[in-house]
Image: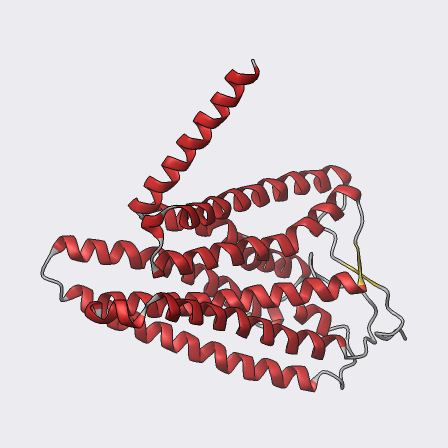
Length: 318
């Protein structure tokens, strides 16, 4: 039987059986990928270039956009290449890199979303202390901690997973190298360390979830006590996008990892993994810009600058 030392490549799940469907999947994935790049790129540019958006909330939104860009760029390009060239192969090194980057970016994103709930809690429940608790140094420290936690978490999981012997072939039943499906290829008696690490990770995940829930309970209690309707509307307008993004992230990830094995199938696993790995990075930009007037105004200015620049260049060269 093959083991990790003899495996030089893995086989990913084919998205379709016929050539026409493969090309249709390629164009669909390309459209989603370009939309995610455009949305997250615009948010990153707007926050980085506009001084009015140099606040803690938008600083963490910038981090979230960068993580979304990295996350969707880790999975979709290889899936698009396989669909375009009618292949399923990914090298052993490529699979290791894809697993490491995906786990790193997803775990760092969860940490950033947790920090963003704390930012909203301080802004609404402790407004007089907001400048002290969320100064630039504190924000940078928390963001660095989120990225560092994701890096350490991913390093532990990736090293532990790929140090296992693979005794059940090299076919990964997923469109990217997803850790649970790679573990299915390992010997049944060899992955107890990884299971223990996953249980520990689940405890950390639940602790962050409890922190988020408690933060939002306090936020909504404070908002409902506000005497001004305008104040309540402003508070909700800053909280609801984050809550929507958080709900989308958590619901899709929990369905992917907590669904009963009895209802598991390759088609269902493919759809669920697509939902939690591709849909949130693509939908986060419109969710955040929908109710945020400052962000919409800045994006509108960027569009105008881009439009006039293109027209100016066109006039010069014609």
